Image (cartoon, rainbow, N blue to C red; front, side):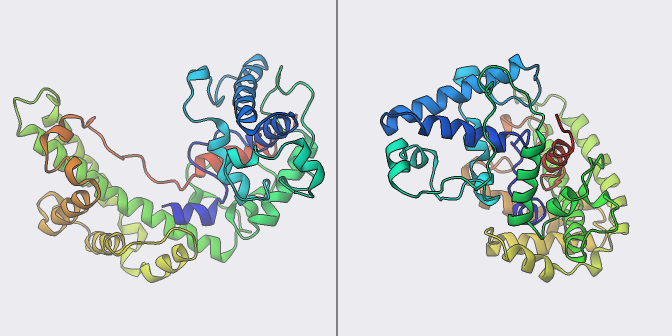
Length: 350
């Protein structure tokens, strides 16, 4: 999942909201770094500035996508931590290190050393940054961000779509019909569509097995609707099986998939590779009678035990009692929803 997402949409993450945060964070840190004080105090200053930024966005009329809108100063994960890795991937921050490391560089150090912490050409922060601001990018900001994507993610689908200078409404990245998408990215999209669809079946079976196990425990405090959940997951599995024919699973070159993912920082472990191969084999034969397929059931059981151990819901009652009735059912889109919103921001000029 993460390997394909990094190849298609580098610099993104599922918890990012709007593209202008890629500029907000450097502006916040530049302001904190300008203060003549200790590193520890600059950490506090930067944190408070992020809260001020949230208030400024609300004052500017933004409601959705404001990080910290509900939590306020109780926010556990700041916007800077959400975007920090993406800033490095796109070359907006040019040095390695965490947020505290960056805040060790104060005005004296930056003056005496030719340190380049941020990319050349980073636009200046607007005067009203901490008073009243919104998510709409300005022309110079769009030009800078397009340049960063082109320089650091040139071969990616993100860049190929960014140069189109248009918004996309497609629900899935493989539905984008632009003829100029490269053969390499079309191959990645084909892998992504197959992986998303095929692995969804494993999650459906997993939830069906949990529902069946919950239905066998009439004295459990939760899941009185387990019988209905069993029926629902059976129906979903039948719908899923109907999607497999169009994907030509038997012709799927898994070695090519593994080769592409192997070129990223995400390395497949042996058990992960074995699980993917095993489940694809089940899907390739049409996954008939999935809930009675001992190979499929055993594969899912072994995978969950390996990942969750004492927290395995299929083996232990306490974790099952905490099951919400649906686990991991969102289909993989490889961060397309985030990328689609960022692409829209690149054409929505203030």
